Length: 140
Figure 1 (cartoon, rainbow, N blue to C red):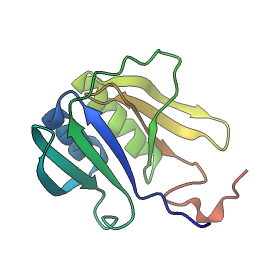
Figure 2: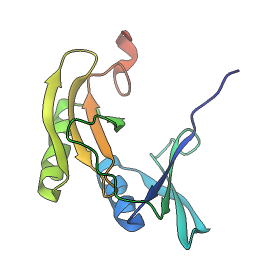
Figure 3: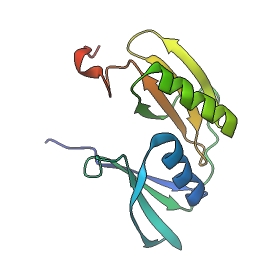
Figure 4: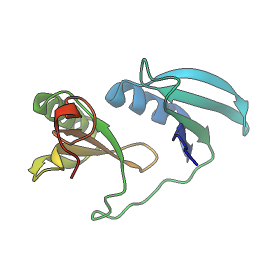
C-alpha cells in the first residue's frame, strides 16, 4: 500500500517561540492557523512545499530534555557549506547551537545542529544524498 509522509505534529511549550525559530532558521512560514487546545494550532511549511510536507505546531507540550549524545533530530538540507556555517554562527549568537559545523564521511556530509525552543534538535546539512544537489549522488 503506497503512502506519503505529509506532516509532523508537535506539542510545544511556547508556540510563538517555536514559530519564530522555524521562520528564522528554516525559512518556514505559517500557512494556516485556527483556534484549538486553548490557544491556536499552526501549520508551517517551506515556501513552495505547502502541499507536500508541513509541521503542525500546537501548545501544551513539555520541554524535551534530550541527552547530549541523542541524535534524534529534524533534518533540513541547505545549498552550501557556507550556509551551514552561517546558520551555526546565527545559532551560536542566539544561544541554541548544540553541534558546531563539522564534516563527517559520506553520506552524512557537513552539518550543524540547533536546539529549538521546545527542545527538539534540528540539523542543517550539505552533501547528503538528500535535498539540494543530491540528484547526482547515489544513496548508500
